[in-house]
Amino acid sequence: MSVIPDKKPGAFGSSPDAALPESVFLHPEDVGGAQPRHPDDEFGRYLRPPMPCRDGRYASRLLRRAEGTVLIDYPVAGFHTTLLEHVTRYRGAGAAAYLRELRLAAGRDGGCTDDAGLWTVEETGIAGPRSLLIRLHEEFEDPSGQPAGKDSYLIAARTGQMVVVLADLGWEMGSGRADTVRDLVDAALRRAGTLR
Image 1: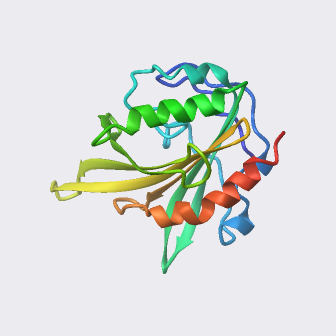
Image 2: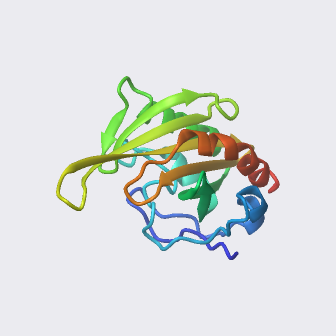
Image 3: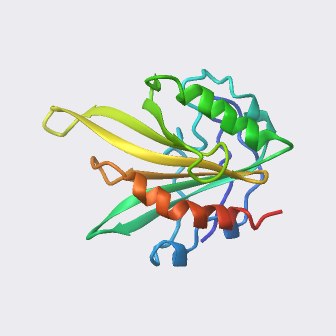
């Protein structure tokens, strides 16, 4: 697996130029033998890292040192789902600041809505202090033109100066599951925590 940095400037400013080593991401033995791979530049951009509903007012973005993303075609109960793991290394107190900003944005009563969909904090403290379990609900039309919806679940959690965002995006029009990210977040944090 070769992990390269997310270099393309996003809607909220430029991304760091430094890459993270592949050792900080989930390994095949963590995910049932599935092989992590780097996504194309645009896939899941709104989760790299998530910055919902703040119109770019995430001051922590200026404290990012390095980041990277992998996708995993993860086997689940007779089928599979798409996992996205984004890891960011921050300067100073940037990791804690980012989680605080994320909670303020998505933690309002009823959540917040932007171009990606409705972001709702489902649970806090799920993987350490200030960690968040967030549901992202997206509305769209299915191939027959009927209204449809899909839920993705993500956990954002910190270990030292690193923030791990682990998301279950589901498959095609099918929703992801909160249990999937709950089951894998400890392994993801353990891997990210190896970088000092």
